[in-house]
Image 1 (cartoon, helix red, strand yellow):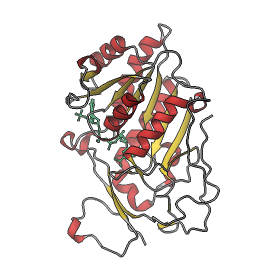
Image 2 (cartoon, rainbow, N blue to C red):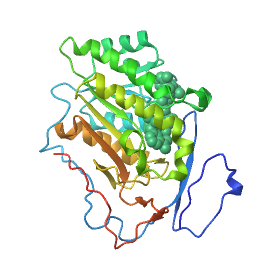
Image 3 (tube, protein in one colour):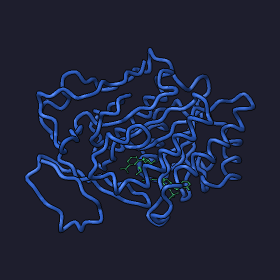
Length: 308
Ligand SMILES: NC(=O)c1ccc[n+]([C@@H]2O[C@H](COP(=O)([O-])OP(=O)(O)OC[C@H]3O[C@@H](n4cnc5c(N)ncnc54)[C@H](OP(=O)(O)O)[C@@H]3O)[C@@H](O)[C@H]2O)c1
């Protein structure tokens, strides 16, 4: 049993059912939305035919060759904060945390935290020139206070400024890998999300689509675009999956998504130039003709992308 609805509906008015489990997916951007989904937590967590993406750093090829400076945009909370935490713990990377608010609570070294607006061209050029990143990860989403009118231009503005700044160092022989956190429903994944949530997400998806297109047309193949399913604030399950298919929908925790991003950075040249959907294999949903959990005997309609 499952329902999806907008945050505009008061919590008290939302239907309650005897769901196996529920999670609230909140896009904490200018336009917030929520999808309340029933999440099957049954024994058959991952169905046959689906492989959880797990990269072995030992025998795989890193996209971060030689040096290992990673700049994370949008690091003060949510996914970006989780990513900074995990990458810093890894020990392989020098991680710079960037956002408008301070990250001093969890980034001790003042050299590694940068308080700036990623839409500002001068600040972005200065940041990239100073840090000389091997990888730049764009996890930015507008804050509630930015207002809904910021879509559909916010992610595009950040991405285009960042692309310009990276192209500056690229011309000096440095080619930062650009990892863009987009959203499922952007670009050619438009039909992978349920029509019930499309209206609420329209501005954000248009914004992400423009950002993706700009990156792909301006930046060559030195990118990875990851389109996550709606994010949930729950404990990580360790069941995150990457797939090139646009037939995956469901949810994923920020922890599991951050883990997949770490695996991409740690493990594989094979992700370069790819557009990958990220979803939790235990939270995959069937969307058409109506939204429901997969039955245990149903094979998921996509194959996992294996980081080589
Ligand atoms: N939430 C979802 O369900 C969902 C679904 C699909 C995709 N996504 C994408 O996943 C990514 C992470 O989402 P999230 O919900 O974890 O994000 P979040 O918690 O809203 O955090 C966004 C981060 O971006 C920073 N930021 C915003 N504007 C900025 C600017 N102009 N310059 C520098 N930093 C800026 C924020 O810090 P300051 O405000 O302090 O600057 C914050 O650290 C985003 O790209 C989002 O679009 C989210």
